[in-house]
Amino acid sequence: MSELPASYRKYLEGRTRDFIETVRPVLQQSAAEAEHGVRVVLNEPHTLQALIDDSIPFGEVVEDVD
Picture 1: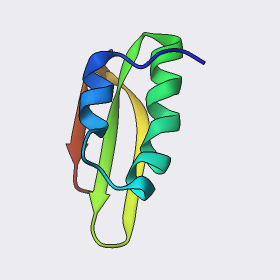
Picture 2: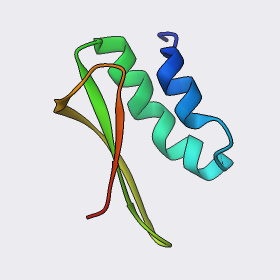
Picture 3: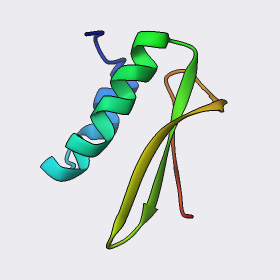
Picture 4: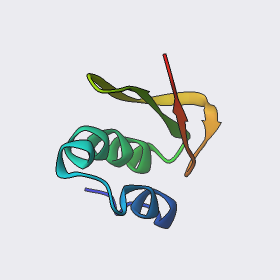
């Protein structure tokens, strides 16, 4: 499994275990491909989704509301 870039590790700092368990696999996939960044969609309190987004540069995470 690929090492996460520093920007992804920093993004996860201070997050809850549930948040990390949801977002980390997508960050790992992004790191393995090293082509695109990640969009995290937050609709609290019930929805959290992370996906690779080809409009975001690799190594960046953008939070969005759906």
